[in-house]
Image 1: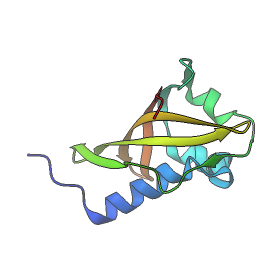
Image 2 (image 1 turned 135 degrees about the horizontal axis):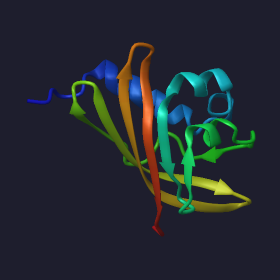
Image 3 (image 1 turned 135 degrees about the vertical axis):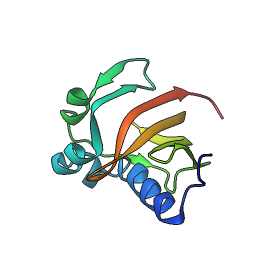
Length: 124
């Protein structure tokens, strides 16, 4: 039986996911190295696929996202694996874009690392 997510894990995972939407952490190389798994892959809202190396090399840019993340849900897939789902609301060039999001995080010796992320656009 898969245990329920603990309050400590829920708080840690929420903080990490939200950090991906803050410029000061999202574009910090040390943060990225620590929190993206070696085999990380993303299916972006744009439809493009990104590797860990591409994500870490992303150019610094301002991020204007709604936080806390709307409709955030966390479920354990195993004792060491969690899925977070939520809706993102982010303004790019003055236009609000929305996406259903899903991230898979696994527990590693250094803490939680993101293994997979996907964004699917939607209109509210």
